[in-house]
Image 1 (cartoon, rainbow, N blue to C red):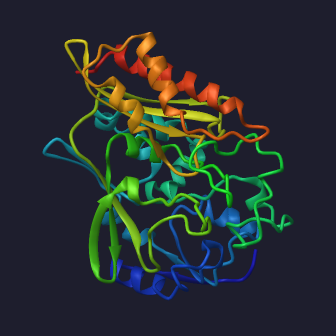
Image 2: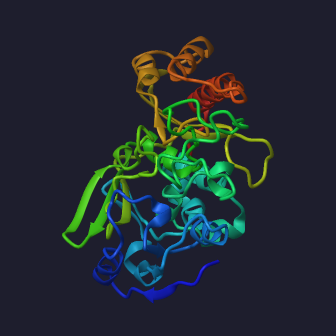
Length: 340
């Protein structure tokens, strides 16, 4: 690990002021001069690998007093970005009214990491692509824009089949973000100019021609909270992976249903493990509206979810696997017992 300067921010203003010293918003994250430090479960790992090389780390944990809340207000849920994954996953009301959130957090990482990792850091975690994380590979457009993508013709079993471009096929690795996508969450962003909110679905950027730019956040901006409107007790997160413990998804689905008298009034589906960014499949959701969900309808919706998939040499299996995950998640959500 390279030497760095350590600072501690005592309030949001000090944090964003320190972080605003970062380079241009068009610089790759790997080259950003200043990085925020919360749980550190991704950042420190990448610094040890020499993938990220910040000159300064700004500790934002002192902001946790106001930024780690789990609030239920008027039937809505607000989660502070510095709330720990394990605390949110274990919260009784989250488990009752938003099981998809509890599931997505509980199925991520190990208990030790969940005790350290924050919600904000989790949604901003970097890809697990081995060609990105191993600096001996020179061809990685995320690390070195314009250098190429070694994964294109390399071993790409875990890579994306949705949202890819000719510049990058790296998979977004998180779980919690899919739950936020399915629940139409908004994200609160704190900057020098104040606080703004936006749909969470607009936070991440697909690789396109600039895979090194992964979010719309500018230097000096921090994710400070997430808000979900309404309650979604009929929701779940289903994750298929190579092993049952501490493994990233090969394919996953976050599903939320509003079912009245056996008819789906509203259905939400977001995919993980198969796309370059958290992936919402609205074309599949349209098929569910005002229908009685059965095995045939679940299968048709699953097919629609992957209609735009583009497989590579080693990851074509993800399409069939992903369809099975979506269909099963829909059927399980439709029949799940709702806790009073």
